[in-house]
Length: 430
Image (cartoon, rainbow, N blue to C red; front, side, top):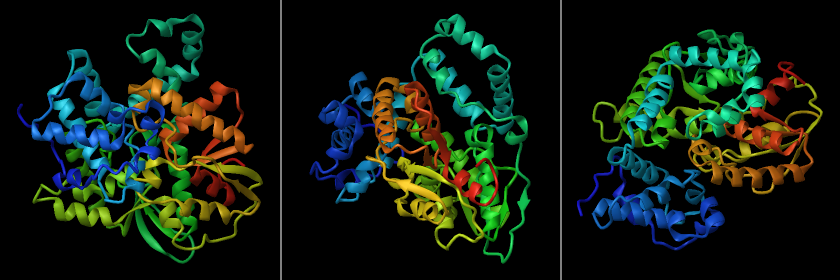
């Protein structure tokens, strides 16, 4: 068999796996399925075999690789430091190159990855159409009449996962510069993102307000677009490279000290730009320097005590760790330390807080059955806390958990951590 040239494959990373099995208990898909090829070490064996030409890229191999969440929980417990996230992305890129699928599938992926996500104006127009569908009564009619069942493929299953989009004013771009309040601490660039901007614009605004309250001048470069995280996770390697270069250039030109990210997948991906562009002589040094300046919003704020005054927020909350924060960026205590500083707030522990909720980028769209099983597991643990709100820091997790709570008939709010901090500063809803 001909070896497969896996783009971005870290050969040393593959060989670092000693097949000890410590990762098995922490892998959600292995925990649920119990099959070796659906474990991290099993998938590493598949990837290595593909790269060495000892195995063909069959439907079965592709299925085992596709079932991976990319949650990177295995990296947290791996004693050998295997860069599993990089390996699975290289495997998926090769799957897309060798098995692009039908014309309809290719067109669908092009519309989403190359048209919508990569072009903010097109995404904004699509968001306006979706907002009209949700607010005009069309959604209610489509659901009540059964018209959704006529949609092809999995589209009917995807519709309930669409977030309720905010009004146009909240989806509008932030000012390009928001001044610091009080003694200036830093000047940062804020990634407003692609889906984040149109679906979670209020969280972006809350992020800017909280940063400003803490002495941070916030710059919002107008030329930014998608960071490429979803593309990398989904095997769109070349587009991911292109978007990474564009993101680096835009934020370099801003002159910001740091780049602040309030979405976990974007933050973990941008911190890996140095590795992503390591084979590009023109960009690798720039990418490495850029990656060193990327900070998750909780990571940045927790470096100093929150500036007061902080109002009371009388709520009992629990915290869910997004995979790409806790495993991808090794950030766990910082969000909890921030919540602990809010007067009146009670934080209760969540069982398996760092266990994937099933969102995993586009996983809940491509692997709905496995995503549903993980969602139900997460919802059961949340219900057991008796909290009145779940706090997290990733839009995908917010959508997945909120949908699961609705389906279970459980009236628990799902909030981004910046929303809770914003409430403590007198912004947002209490």
